[in-house]
Length: 319
Image (tube, rainbow, N blue to C red; front, side, top):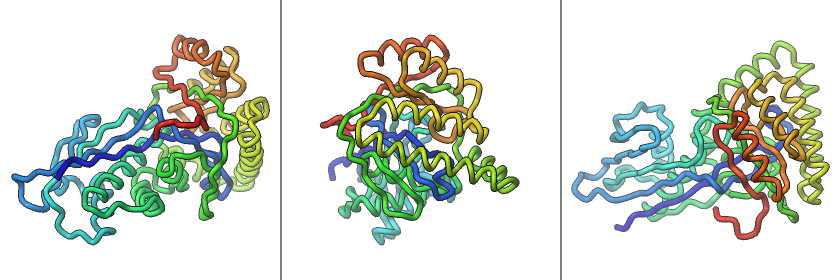
């Protein structure tokens, strides 16, 4: 049997992080410049049921059965086998590689899950439809993030901009006027689950204050959807700035994130904010294509350890 592979893009939150966990809307967009890849190859000399995991990015090379039962890679493979009702799979190797930075709000874990689900189900002759891929990735994401909103698995599976409200059907956003985002990485790893838990504890202590902030973020997200659809970059930039200020009120920003946001704005960005869990990870800036390279250099000179320029809504963008 020939090798089978599948890809999955990264994602970035445009508006609504944290508030989305509490029922408000969020907007997320795919980042196709960085991706996870899963390659399935047969191991004809090994007995049936032997699954090898080769993940060089994290220094892992082991039999699946030797991983902890709760290990996300073991869970995702088990979920696929259970869904397909495969008790003993053929002997195979799953090689996982990714160019998505870890623990930086770009959905690296979910992208890996989506790539594995697609590749393994196809290898076993029963490729799963996108809704099932997304649902399985969501179940695995619970291990990574504890109380995920469901937005990561949605935007990464479908590789389209989405307007998302928890427990409601996702809405795809038609981007009629492409826009350019600059992603700047602080270099500080910040697992989303720990920040989400801190916000939850603060919300539990003072729910009225936090609900008010979530309401404001939700309102910005609705306005953001309209700005994305109409291609109004000026309004879109202003909304990014307002959203960042509210995330600062939530206590999820950091001096490093605030610094890169300020640098981007001073360099000519139309708007900027942290993206994802916060307290590290990435910020995003809305930039003009003509000034993107200049702003990228300035961010790199002022502390960004990694930058990505991505066009949202560009026709023909690879998935």
